[in-house]
Length: 298
Image (cartoon, rainbow, N blue to C red; front, side, top):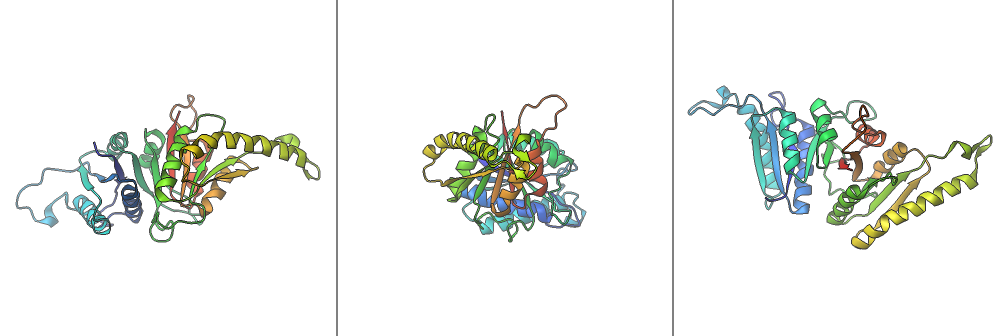
């Protein structure tokens, strides 16, 4: 089966060609699919989808609006990417069920997100959040207007690809995704690691520099050891360190300011009653200004 990137399209009769967020996500997904040599699937779930009766005018066809969203988006993307394999997939399913099925069959799923507040936080409905929290493959969140021209990823900024690393635990899946993405784009990869200072580092007049230097040296050595095999495996990728003596969430949000893509992790198996997304992923989803890829890992 040909590797595929799936983008979830949404919309309504009020947004005749799909929402601005899903259109931005579709453009981002098409660029990424072409860059990686994958096919692109345009998925729109319409539970009321019915068999098309012969001879029914468009205005009386209950599938018209759902079909229009897929057709219009597909026409634009085929014109922009004439060599890209684009598959239209209009299904009679619940959106959550359709996206989860697609996630199991795809290299990644791409969804649009809405900015609600002056800080332009991401907003995901229940369906999107469920997919992010449970999909077995990476889920990329794209916001309309991110990166200037509707979230075009070929607008590379100074940051290239940023990947958030916890270091105390497995991070192979994140580094695999990050290095492959950076290599396909021909941009640097920035490994971001935030390390909060211990309580004993703070003194009445500020920060004990000796303690801070010791913490920074330990974190730097661990970061170097973690990156070394990946630098050897991807010599064409310039991998730079992004160590910051601050909370991991703050370090990640700050790194996203000039990145083209931010990659964060999500544990597949979390403790009972624990949230499905950790604090760093939550911070990235709600505050990063660039597209965010949430990558599941052990």
